[in-house]
Length: 319
Image (cartoon, rainbow, N blue to C red; front, side):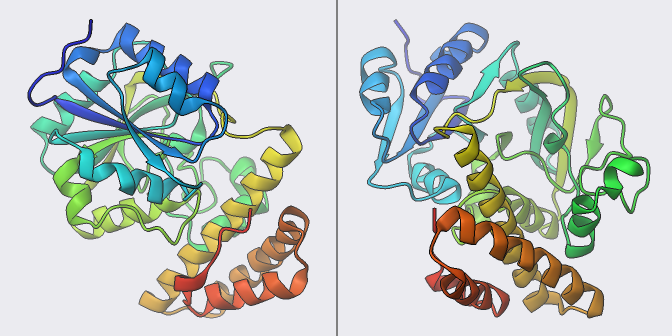
């Protein structure tokens, strides 16, 4: 029987939306490799209809379940769990992660010792054992994103300019301070994320961690990539088919980048290069969104205009 301590040494937050099978696998691997008796595990469920909540209550009674009435998005889902955090440290993890070795104590040890680190993340592997490039990445400003979309990062991975999107010029097997980690698995102090105001809920899905890490870095914290500990990211836990997965991914990834670009333009201004890159990525967004959302070019053009001029308060997720 799992015994809860008065104060756990780390809280684990998992946002779930219809990922019942992957979530169960993830929690079983956590109890296998981690000291789960001394962890607080919180699942923020975004209105799942696949029996996820019932499964948690029957198979994993040690999990604290936060039930959101609808799919409110990744950032908002994490934020809804923050008031329940009891420890000084919090690990954010996707339901499609799998522990293959002890990770939490190793990350925690580094975070406790070095107060200049604001967030830390491990080496993340894909299901086939290959390296997941998103676990260390640069800030995706418009030029960097454009180079990535044009494939220049693959052609010139050692270039600090063209390889910035995934920081491919940095060795995958060496610790490094990076612009951002993968939002699928990273650890921070609960005080740090609370002082930062949590995740920005204008981002429904994707890039919200990049914007969070940007705020961390502006507050003077380092973002540390730590490759000597590993986890596996299987991906796709919350998608019902491959075509929908691709549409969902590209729509929200492009939309979130546009929101990030617009926020930074409002803050720092933007030159000709910025507007050219923004235009090209915007055209990509409009094309994908018409197919993905199926609401026509007028509605999507209106949403783009709102994004471009920073009118974030009325944006809808769309999918």
